[in-house]
Length: 60
Image 1: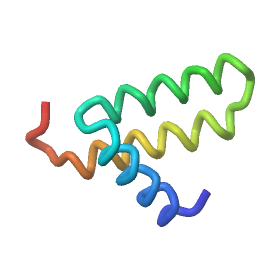
Image 2 (image 1 turned 180 degrees about the horizontal axis):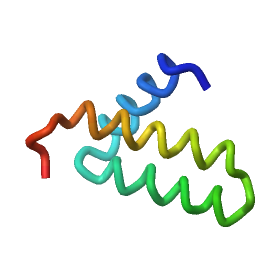
Image 3 (image 1 turned 120 degrees about the horizontal axis):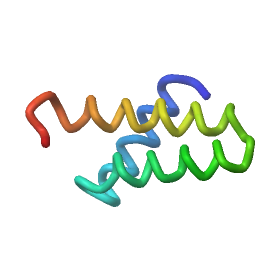
């Protein structure tokens, strides 16, 4: 997935879930990993990192 799409998806997930967006992305990554879909799991991890950047360094 392109970086711009990951950022776009991260923003939408953050807008929808607020502070719980990172947790949701982590949950999706684990589900994909458990199902053996490592490529999709990596995409969700990238989304999670993008959400962390959106939240900024001072978010807890």
